[in-house]
Length: 224
Image 1 (cartoon, rainbow, N blue to C red):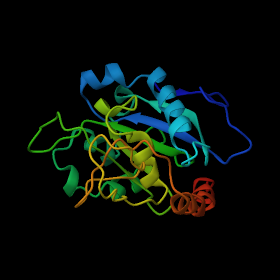
Image 2 (image 1 turned 135 degrees about the vertical axis):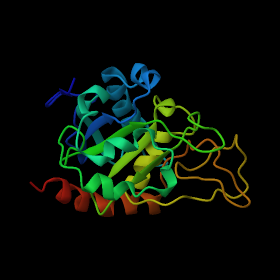
Image 3 (image 1 turned 60 degrees about the vertical axis):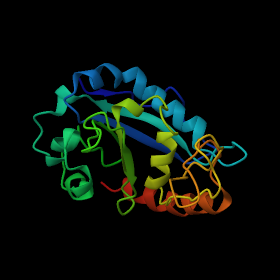
Image 4 (image 1 turned 180 degrees about the vertical axis):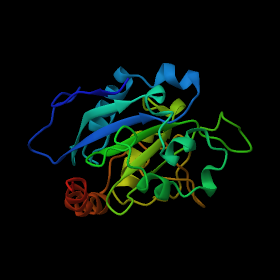
């Protein structure tokens, strides 16, 4: 079932901040994922982003609003090759952006919104118990992809971290950090450091980068 809540969200748009609509789509055929990736959970994902996509002082940078959702049974027969990536075993060898950009199915890709995809991540070491995600700015038409087991802010602040990538941010090396250290949202494993808890908001340089891309992304998403 395709669902759209026009003008409605678990968090209403705040006119004090630039607000971005989010379209959700479930790419994986995994029935366990379907039990988790529900309409109510997608609305909660918006709440999570509005709570944690923030500056170091916990103040907002931008806001997010639920726009629509497509579930696996809605889109499994789409002609978009992007659908086939929901359970891919070649995640790191796949040009996700090319498949995304070639998709013209509005139930799969909403061209006027940020697109948030749920998939079942795989690698050789962990199989489908791999819990990965990534975000791409994609020439100012961003999308993020998150393993279903990381929904609801599970495992190292995935929503705000991947959305940070979608707004042009790179990884941050938190030197001296341990796995239990408080670290910047964009922290990642590095020599002499650790991902940590990713519970410190974006620093001034990161906020400036995000705000540089905000009007560029807004303009691209406004195109017909």
